[in-house]
Amino acid sequence: MTTDPTSRYDQTRMPFLESLIDEKLNQSTSFHMPGHKGTKAPHPLLQEFFGGNLHPADLVEINHNVDYLHSPKGALLKAQQLGAAAYGADHTFYLINGSTVGNMAAVMSTVGPQQKIIMSRASHRSVYGAVVLSSAIPVYIEPEYHPDIEFPLALNVNKIKELLQQHSDVAAIHITSPNYYGVMSDTASICHMAHAHGVAVLVDEAHGSHLCFHGDLPRSAVALRADIIVQSTHKTQGSLTQSAMLHVNDNGFVNRARIAQVLSLLQSSSPSSILLASSDATRMQMATEGQQRLSTVIVLSQNARNTIQRMNGLWCYGDELIGVNHVFTYDPTKLIIRVSDLGISGFQVSSLLRNQYNIEVEFADLKHIICSITIADTESTVNKLLDALHHLTSTNSPTTNSNEMSIRPPSGLPQSAINLRDAYFSTKTHTIPLCDAIGRVLAENVIPYPPGIPLLVPGEIMEQRHLDYIHHLIEKGSSIVGMEDLSLKTIRIVDV
Ligand SMILES: Cc1ncc(COP(=O)(O)O)c(C=O)c1O
Image (cartoon, rainbow, N blue to C red; front, side, top):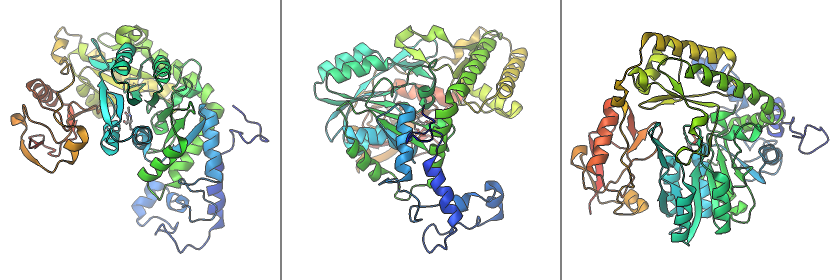
């Protein structure tokens, strides 16, 4: 990374943040938005919470010096260029609505109405949202179910090949790698194959922005020359929640100007400078110190993994994941800790850690808790987790009844009666008791959360196996989102 002060790619600079500091010093008298006009918070409690600095820093493009997200020409343009150089892309867009908007823009800028997109069935809801908005036709690919983790983890490249041969009119492939568990598919082969078919590869790398900055981590899809790569820098680096990046590689399959247009369509016309400044600073931090800080993260994670593997009744997955059911590799900074051998569910351990040890995990499922180690962690934070787990194993003995935790999600794709968009916008719908929905076409999503992957989407038919699975998840403490009735007793169906 360049740190030469004479270079336009000097990564020690933070052009956008620096421009805000200059503007703040100006202290102009404002007759424009925002209504707070940079004065202190409207309530002392908010003032106390933010430390009094947030409102004065909430500068907008009307301020003379502040560059505008939707037509960057100055400091923000430079910041994005530094972003592209740091992450290794041909172009980078900073985002203010997370990877959610990144996924939507990736799909909407490459796949037109009635064009096909091959997408993982285990995609984040934002990808389904993109399909609704774009009128694209999804061709689903189911990731391979991992027998032990009991979750569909990685994509079978040969299945993608078959789909590409069956559907010669596909406009793009959308994949998620790493997924919620840090498990990665063979993105390089997917890119190679897709590009040979003239098809763009869009990668949801929401959980992988750190991969760009250390040679011992799996390679980011940016380096593997995927066409659009979306990263939640707020998830695994230091930027503020909602900030994210969309990277573009100009391989001839996507149109950068079109992406800019779609982002302008989807994102607020009043972008938060605070979020953008946090992206600028995070890029600087990762470009200048990322390698060194991630070395520490890798050591902390590996030590934690080794220690947990020695704890009676716990297991933390590592290299044994590779090669099983098409898992290409995994992100070592995510700890997938199996707790079910202790006879308690991941959900129970997650609340136990919260209530007894003041520890919040990234998420839990029936059998696991998932913990994320980042550059913000230290030996002390990781030891806190290890101490708590150690205590947990000393008060709970391994049991042979852990199978009670198991329930396999229904395999095979649900039957679709109407396309997703038509079902989503259908006006001929009514609400019925959930248990009467078997054989009916849904008008709303059913999404077990976490990790937020739809079990059923609008237009699909609910079967007994889906209902059984929903009941089981609810009984075990999982949440279901996407349904209008938060009590989960009724569901809206399409009248067909
Ligand atoms: C795989 C995946 N993609 C996209 C998103 C959306 O990211 P964001 O919260 O930055 O909008 C998430 C959020 O959890 C995610 O897990």
